[in-house]
Structure formats: structure tokens, C-alpha cells
Amino acid sequence: MKFLALLKKELRECLPWIVAAAAFLLIFGSLELRSMVRRDVEEYQYRVFERYSEVSAYDLGKYPLGDVGALVFISAVGLGLALGVRQFWVADFTGTWGFTLHRSTDRTRILAAKICAAIISLIAGVGLVLCYLFWRASLPDYSPVPPPIGFLIGGWLICGVGLLFYLGAGLAGLSKARWYTTKLAGLGFAVWMFFTFTQQWTLWWSFVTLVIGTGVLLYLMWETFLKREF
Amino acid sequence: MIDEVVLETRGLTKYYGSVFAVDHIDLKIPRGCICGFVGRNAAGKTTAIKLMLGLLNPTAGTSKLLGCDSAALTPAIRQRIGYVTEGHRLFGWMNIVELERFQRTFFPGQWDGKFFAEMIEYFGLSKKQKIKHLSNGQRAQVSLALALSPNPELLIMDDPTLGLDAAIRRQFLSGMIEIIMREGRTILFSSHILGDVERVADRIVVIDKGVIRADCKLEQFRTAVKKVILAFEDSAPLQVDIDGLLHCRRSEKELAMILVGINDDKIAELAKSAGAEKYHIANMNLEDQFIEYTAPDGRGKLFKWEEI
Image (tube, rainbow over all chains, first blue to last red; front, side):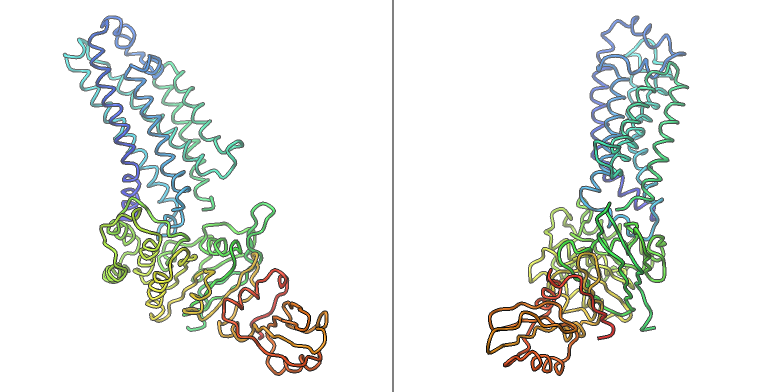
């Protein structure tokens, strides 16, 4: 019950950002799908769909802003940053840590609720919208060839990039160092892992990169949160 | 059980870099006591309270609440402690109903919903109001209701009346008195409004520049700190040297002294030995006493209050 109460509170605080990210991806993603119909289908197939067995995060992200993959990148990264700032920077700024932390539960559970809320938010704000766009793109009206499943898997991995940025922003918010020293190190690491992620040529290696980056940031955030002074 | 200590600190110290915020605080607050924790701005009150609640890590020393080390307060112990934060920082997007629902989850079988509703009604608030739309005073009232409703054994409040007008402060203190009426409840509240302390506290802890300057019953403090004015026919002596002298101010024919722990007989003797023509003991309220006691020229002088 206590965890659920914490989770609910975190989700409610994240809700405006979930809605914003979902609306962004839905609107611009739908527009992009419409424009896809008018494009040279053959070229598109060559660039993405016919190479589906080798489709990578790089493929999904390297196209101009108009491409759905790039939109997923933008929404996931933006939502991740917004969640990190909302959960950790705003709590610091509004001085609600004392009220949040002094209750009959431990810090581990409070942090777990925050991270779970962030994961659910990324799934709801980006992942599910991506599924919807994938389904729409699979309809004959949009494309003569249904997009490969690699597109969807890659998109979900990009949601994971949102988690990377969430952890980076959160860690920066928890850090008490000055901004020009190590305060933004977590965020810097997230950016570095993001570029490493996009440079991988297979989804498998993108996944490995994501797991390593997320693992490192998660461990650092956990340690920082449990020991930090509020 | 009346002598059971619910809050104890030993050598509690906190440095921020090379600057100390609190310095070797030794406190023992017995059960059933209403303790006013007073000090000027930046005296170290909030830091000390946060250390006690385990929100800050001490540089040295230890602190125990209800027998449990502050650095490792268990959820079960936290459930027995109410805490009102400085500035009454609550979740602004919640309304009072949502906030109560959230808060009661953490006090299973302990939350008194009827009492909470009564408090909210007493303060004239609507449960539908969002916290962010409440004034500072109204937020203070909600904070108090939230802290009191689980009927905590120990209530710690960090400057709860800060920024409140006189009427709201009085209402707030009435709410505090509500809990005082409950047997065995202990309250520690920091404040720099001495009128509030005088109204409800039975014990006073004075902190000044991170150092505990007094820890005694309120009545002890009231009777111990005195302002004595010696009047001389000729010019007043440049200085007098007596035990318990905190500081003195000299004018042409008068010497105004702040004395600590000196009884009236000794004051009469002092006046006589100093060659004063006459003397009188000035009336001081708690605020005057506090201001004189923590005046910069009296710093560094410590008195053992327990022995007074």
C-alpha cells in the first residue's frame, strides 16, 4: 500500500510530461506517417524496411527530424530529462524532501517508486504511442510493405534511452557539487552513452550499451540517494 | 516512565566544509515535555532538527529518537514521530483530501481521520482546496493537522509559526495545546518567537551560533536571567567582576548588568560591595531575557543550567 501510494504520487507528478510527450509523438508521428505515403516507397524500403534484418538504432535515428525514429528519440530523451528534473530538481527547489522522506517507509522504497514511475511514464508516453504508430504504419493505406518488427524493437530500445537521460538528470539533481565541477557528470555520461548507443550497428549492441549505461547510472543514483543529505 | 528520555544527542556536530553549523550538542528531552528550541536566525536550529531526524549526517556525535539511532531510523520509529517542516513544504498539486489520503497510508491503524476533519473544519479550510492555492498560514494549519492526526508520541516542528500573523499563530498554538493535553506526548519545536514559547513550553533550549547555551525548565530560565541596574552617586565603576555576569553596559552613573543564576541576596551583597547608592532588578519578559542572553557580548560564556 505504501509503495502504491508513493508510485501513484510520482505518476501524478509525471502526468503532464507523459501527456506532453505522447501528444508530441502522436501528432508529429501521424503527420510523418502521412507524408511517408507520398514518398518514394522504394527508396524508403531500401533505406529501412528491406534491411530489416539489420535494422539498427542508428538507422532509426539518422534520418532528418521528419522521420518517426528521430521523433521517438526526441520524445524519449525529452521525457526522460523532464522526469529527472521533475522528480529530483523540483523537489529540491520546492523543499519538499523533508516531507517526502520523513514517513514510515525507507528511502529504498521511495526511490524505487520514483524509478518505477519513470519507467511507466516512458512506456505510456513513448512506448505505447510507438506501438500505435507501428500498427498504423502496418495498415495497407500507409505502406505497401508492413514495417519490420525491428522497427518496433528499436523504438522500444530508444525508450530505454529516455531512462538513461532520466537517470542522468536525476543524478545531476541529487548531486550537491557545483554545476561547473561534477554536478552534471551523470548527465554527461548519459549523453556519451546516448551517442555510443546510436553508433551501434545492430540492435543487440545498442541493447548492451543501454544496459551498461543504465546500470552504471542506476547504481550511482541508488548510492547517492541513500546516503545523500536532504 | 515520566523520566524516560525520548530524544537524546551526544556531541552532535555538523560542519559544512570548515564552517560549523552545530557544535557538540548534548540534549536530553524527557517524555511528556514541551520543549521550545530557540535561537536567532542561522543559530543552527534547522540543522540540529534535521540531524535528529536523520535527514543530515552528523560530522561527529550521535543522536537518538525513541531509543533508535537517528542515522538509522526505522519506518516503525518514524511512524511514531510527527514532523512539521520549516515553511510547511507540502505537495502543491494535491488538495487537502488527496494529501490526507496519501499521508494516512503511512500510518496504518493509527490515523485519526475524525480528528483531521475536525482540525480542518476548526481552521475553516475546505478539503477541496489545493495546497498551492493556500496561504502560508493555511499551509501551516494543514501541516499541523497532518502531523497531529496520527497521534505521534514525539512531535518535532521546525519553526511552525514562522511568517504567520498573530491570529493564525494563536490558532496554531491552540492546535498544539490539543496534543499537549494527550498524556505522554512530547513536543520539540523551534522558534524565534519567544511569546509562543512562553505560552506553551515547559522547557527551553537556547542555541546560539551552533552551541547550546541553555537547556533547562522554562521557569528556571525565567528566574535565572536577570537585569540588575546599579545606580551610583558618582561615576559608575568601569567594571565589576562577579560570577554569573553575562555582560554589562555602563553609563555615567549607572551600570546595567545581565546576571545569570544569581539570587536576590547575592545581588544585594554585590550592590553593597560595589558601592552602589541603590539598585533595582528590572522586569524582563522572555524575549528580553533571550535577547540579552544571546547578545554578542555575552557569547562564549556558558552556564551549567542544571545546577542553577
